[in-house]
Image 1 (spheres, helix red, strand yellow):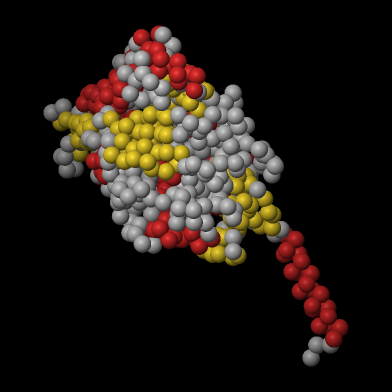
Image 2 (image 1 turned 30 degrees about the vertical axis):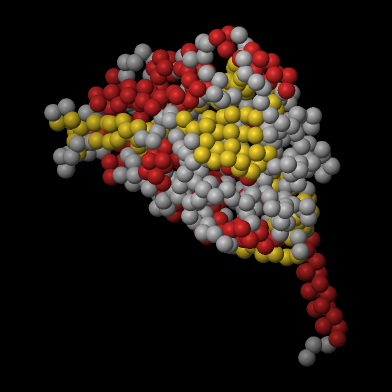
Length: 613
């Protein structure tokens, strides 16, 4: 038996241990969450610096969509949803566009997190409402998480994979618990959850396409729909969140209308004819040559290049490594020598672009030079399972002198192809074993890209490779992309300053077999899976940088893509009816902070001979 003194001592020990555990994991209540480091805006901030509280509300802006749409459900794989539909849905938090990765309360008034971030609790605003005036409740938040994870697109299953439970823990509170393991990003990921109405969706099939305007809780609602042709959003009057600091000076347009055009060429001509108001130009040739029109010369159309500091990610020719022809890494490396970026940039782009050499270009996360000590520590456990060059060389894509003469590059390509078991017979590259010729199709959805791809096809032909270009409409393109029914596409992998759980969807082995995932390259590599897990679990900013650079190197030397190019500014053209804040966000264009200036709009319409909106 224990003596009273022993029991008291044991009780004291237990209390001491409990206190020690509690002290190790204090719970913080906060108005915002940052991935690493301090928050820029304190609990009493009035608005984001890049939003003007004096912005004028009103006016109509017309924008362009390309292709078509056939559904108003943006959360599922089926169907094509229209541009701008995200404005219908409020989220728990809002990301700041002038910080690397910080989120501030929106539907959530405050958040509670322990030091290890093993869970997060969101305390909801009592005034938060859906469009039908019903309150947003914890039950709605729990429902939103569960339905998106179970019936939403593959992205949500990958993004929320490390969230174990969602539960109501009070009349206005929801708690999300996470699977074991360090993952600092998860509270911020859950903050991005769009809040759906349980009452609305429980009477409908969530995983079906629909043209019924859904019930939302965001600043806009659908006013009119002409399926496949146009959609008009109207600003919600007396929106419940208008005076929240995260919304002040934003969502200023009274109406936003998207008109859909068959392709980008038709859309450009429509813009110059005044059919819509704002355009972000993505084609360097058009930026250089297509705007020499009277409206530009007279100042009715303004053109600007707005610098930004956001990572530009990777745009590239993407191999579908599920195809037998692309399973050999040497083949993928070889074909990259047939793409002449320097000639393309000089001849087609007027030298506007920078060659992309990293999946995290234009950021400190991009690998460069040889691996540093932090990266080597991350890569060391995998040294026997990665190409030796990952540790000993800096990745650089093939380059040329820009003359168009790339014979030396094609020789290098042929040496690689010969080593991979291919040979030339009767001017055709064939497999030595099977005799089957190398043939591939490059799938596009933008005709303007054909002029870029056709010289690449010509160079492939010089290697004996038959490559065809197939341009299809937006719907067919998306269906084929979702089903991985292609040989090669032009794809992009956008990145943030705080990469994390979305990397699973880009590169995870499980996602390679999940239709609709963003792992379009079909990457299935246990080393990549492990490095993605390392990125997700990074405990601090320097660790994130080292681990991301290590992942970047392994992906680059895997030759899953042929890198293309990037631009470090937004090229925009717009009819002179807008004003915008003096401060531009570092990491976004910030069109939602612009407004229709009544005086400018009246002057513009007077000069064009039209009545003002």
